[in-house]
Length: 296
Ligand code: PMV
Image 1 (spheres, rainbow, N blue to C red):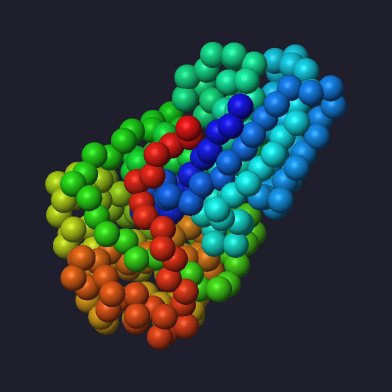
Image 2 (image 1 turned 90 degrees about the vertical axis):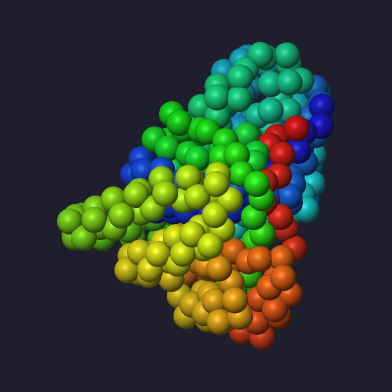
């Protein structure tokens, strides 16, 4: 049984989503493939992933829950954990889909989501689950309340440039830091999260309408709030400013912050210029596109 799952990029709403607020996320066309076969012993062949904990927990969870026999698992991937495309979510989703298909366990995508979310929480304790939703459902998604609401965002298309900072973001420690900040300055952080929530609702509408000018502006506002939260970095700012100066409609960090990638919304005409500006500012442009298919 061979299954592949896409990575993701956060478009709007990171950090606030950890507290049940909404976000918008898109699946990207970098995929991770998992092959599973029945066997007498549990065996992993995993050159395609660094996310061994997630893989092992998924297998432990599935074998225990459905009382299934042992499996041999092979993982290959067109991306690693390097860029922050959600390889841990993709490996969890692909493994669970492959195992449940192989043993003919009938599950809806929403049910699969709940199992995958439990696995992720067993491993890393925190996380909103948005990345699992993108990997399972694909496309561009409105996500809220830890997966209670997962809805497709239909749209006429948009162009993104993705700039990698070369710095690794430590998602878990940044999320913990924001939790501390929220304890210390509850009003300030709540105010930011509530402003981000309004912005996400607005962004969903404007993405659906194809109003890219407005979507770009909203990305800029989202970036201001993330800066206020303290999760931007010099390198992210350099790439974001370079993109903005050369005509991007909007630009922001994507994910936990302090590293990984920034995204810029561009017109087709400006794409090359913006890409070049990001390279000149010391970034690496990644050729991935949004709106990829979910797990297959
Ligand atoms: O760092 P990434 O790309 O895994 O994104 C993290 C997004 C957060 O909202 C900060 C955390 C989460 O689990 O939603």
